[in-house]
Image (cartoon, rainbow, N blue to C red):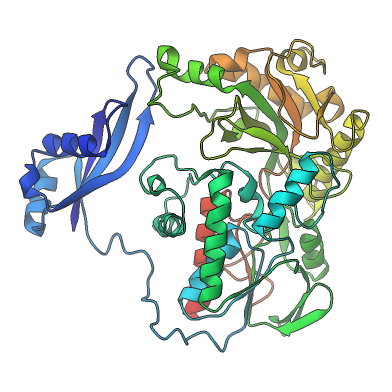
Length: 534
């Protein structure tokens, strides 16, 4: 079907045609011998900032399978890809789309997992009902804007809840560590519905919160056009079962309906749902996660640390990083790095403070930020199913109290240098914190257990040896970052059904089976396919 030519190195000024031409020359192929070709994947190699370059892979169709195979046998950097290997979904979409119309499938949550579960089911002839507790993306945008400006928190429509889930107000990263062919399906659906085409070939694709909101609306319209329903301000509040099988779901406390399958894609912040499931004796386990703070540097200092003398080269993307260090059985690492972004208030419960990061597609803000977090486990917070929820809730409530003298929903903050020295002052900060409503000086030793602040300090010292900007005492830390991943896992078996209730499909990040937009979306597709198989 095609040859993949890998390890194609070009300058950072190279465009698509030049990259393809370099690849064909490397493989010894004359342009006239190639029917079609294009860039398959492109990444930036900045390990040596004196020799920064693009490293790409290129696909080429020769129209002669035997010739393609011979080329791959001769050239170690060429691989043959057959049609079967790039097949995305295991079944053809039904032309009359009647297969699933007599089955009642409800999806709780309209984040990436719920959205792609609904899309897949609708493409195969089902008419799923999506119940999302928050508002649509336009309403969310207005509600979040008001909250960031000092208004009241809406506990159902906020940065955590509503159309698109928590990822809607983020950097829109589409990177993932999972190696699954369905990743391509998800990327193609995003591109078909308005995401920039570059997400199909960039090694670190992102959409940005501004573009992502339009893509989400287009995906919703497609689901509805195929026969699905999307109901906002509709929360899953109860379930009933009979003989170990799901029978009904209750929405908004009063609307009960029969249900053949429930995809539970509620996200990592649906604590009331976790409590309801626990009351119903659904098997839930505590899961490791991480807590810490957001650290802000200037984007210029990040670029200088990564690119050296080429820090202002317009052909280079805004610098981004991922750092980690482990000692004494515990990890400290950066997470969800947002180039050119801002720190945002991400609370979903009253009188709590939570931080997160957000970037637009252009990533053109003055600051960069990322989470600086420390791993915690049931050894730290307890082995009961909801002990992790109680642990982070206590931190979020304490953060609200510690910073309340600054104003409602202000966040605790400190300069990196002060924090390293055991203080909690913003004196000496050279970075202007972007968190709104605002920040209050605070000692993080009053907010976190000592094992967390100790590891954060160790991390800062270690990372400063890898990137110069992490040695800047004027960087700003804003806390707490507590929603890195779900504190629970709603255990499921090979059928992707709950270990304790047939017909219940725990799905995505909230159920403990994903981390980020891509892996959650893929998990949603997989849950949908399991239901289709039945």
